[in-house]
Length: 351
Image 1 (tube, one colour):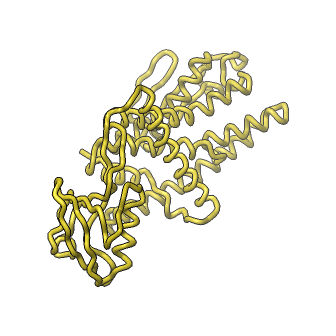
Image 2 (cartoon, helix red, strand yellow; image 1 turned 135 degrees about the vertical axis):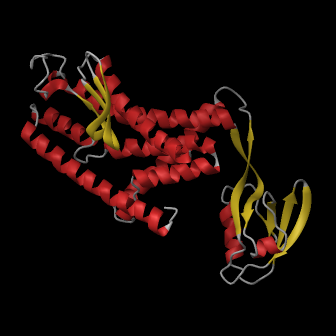
Image 3 (cartoon, helix red, strand yellow; image 1 turned 120 degrees about the horizontal axis):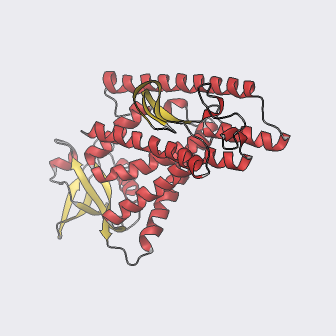
């Protein structure tokens, strides 16, 4: 069931992206004759007088088709409402609309999450999520949902870095007894635990976060904005490290990897699917705006060159660049799919 939810999230985000292109064209009166999710052979389709809506065999993306160069189209080549006959700005709006749709959706998903769960408010200490049997924490009676307030005489406080602070305290004290001050359902408890030789005590941790109702109408929008910029900053940093070679291509995930990770998130807490959907949506937006042949960014580059030169780039050149880009993207996708599938099926890796 979780995998169906994960596949549904990814498919929905593809629909959102392509719907951005489609609506931007239709609202400007530009002809659009195909709306497809996936590539390759058509599995299911629904025809209307203006548009073919189709689900295709390879769900690695989607596309909106235009009748500009369709040999079966009955629309005259000089029709002013063909995409290629419209001003550069009109075409640019169509090209960038998919990216805008994914960015807007990311924010809306986070806003819905805030409205459902409330405003996060840090509370003192850290929460024990789980303990491992026969490990130091479990052996001294530390329990899930215990709130650790102090470790080795150090107050963990309200800091969002309190989990890292606690981990450093434990890791720096292998085989050394540590006194932990714990809040157990309102009762103050002191437990002494001795980390093993690797500085581990066998627990899962999370910040102690409480949730409250919004103080006013504006606060949910502000909180969603903060979450959005957090995602944006981390995603941009990740892409920057990839482009500068600080991290390798092996850190990328295929649709298989994304679906597996999203399913895991759904298993732990279904409501977090909204947060995951926002993250994936923003990543799709950023990826598509890059000037990689075959993606939206490359079409915008061609439009920029046309604006500078005063005439469009040769269609032959555009087609060659597009074909090269699609071969590259398909090859990369297949490599990543193989990598993620191998990790999942053979190695049992959590990606």
